Length: 483
Image (tube, rainbow, N blue to C red):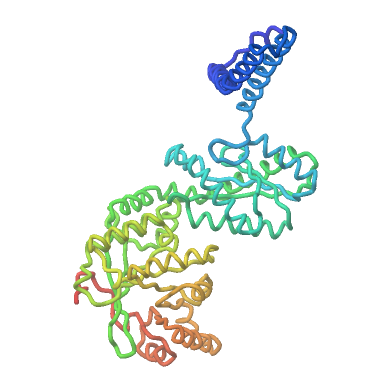
């Protein structure tokens, strides 16, 4: 057995690291050593030392040099933070968590992971992956600090897995972590989508931290397996639709869009606005709407690319100087929050390819974006460029009311449910109050899919500002759009 230990192989990298540590420690200790030697020499020269003192001084000097080199050498060996993410390394976070558990400073341990870190490394390179890990930890620390968890001790356990302790009620902590999960998925880092998930476990589960972390890893891995199983049918559909999927991606990459438009009229019959209706042109000759391919956009992370490609094509085929209407263009809310989209918009404006004063960016969102203040600031920056904003599916089962309260919106486009249910007296009263609220706020209201003139007149009587539908005009080719 001793033979194996004696002949144990040391890696070249380990040897090099040891040599570097020793040389660095030696360099640091040399000035202090020379200073002590000079001091001893001066004292000895002046006759203040006898031979015994010289021997004692030499021994003390040797011990000092050895002690300094030893401390510096092993000081370099020990590191507290991970060089990539700059959070604590595993050994240190385990030591901290054990101490916090012992002193009852935490009652829950959390395992948080970036689900798509491997995909990020593959698609964008490991350097970008490392940058994501670092910025992700900073975003998380900032978010938790805003939630009252200042100076949170976070450690990187392995790859994209991070561990930390929290003190509070399970329900409240889970809600906060879900808020972050939602925030980071919408916000992105360096224009790269981040997908996260977490598991939380009370410290009462076990006194041994290793058993808690093992249980957390088991739970988070089991969740991944269950997700894979539940998506088998979806994956099969994706395989069956592989050619269609590829055609959609290729069409977006080639910015292959065609457009029709439909007029929007006020109660005097004046066609003051138009709604742009885009379709993606596939190589097969098919023209597909965004609603038909929304799952493919999500699957390929092409949501924002779709909107950017569409805006570029709009800038090529519409001569804004030739039109006097405001053009409604529907885009996704995450696109508005994306830096790449903003950069493309600025380029188009600088090159006089679009006129922001004639564009209404229309959007809706199912769930409320957690950083509403930040979102409002983004919209304000776009408005400073000249854009107007429309909130679609207004009054439906979505975030419209919350956004209506906090965002500077110019138009609301009612959810289609109001078309179907205006015969209901209660719905009708709500509809009238909504119109009244919009008028008081200086916001214009629009309702679409209106086919019958009688219904159109009723809507105007109830306070709607604009109507769109076959009663105003059928969709027309974009070539007809002129002043």
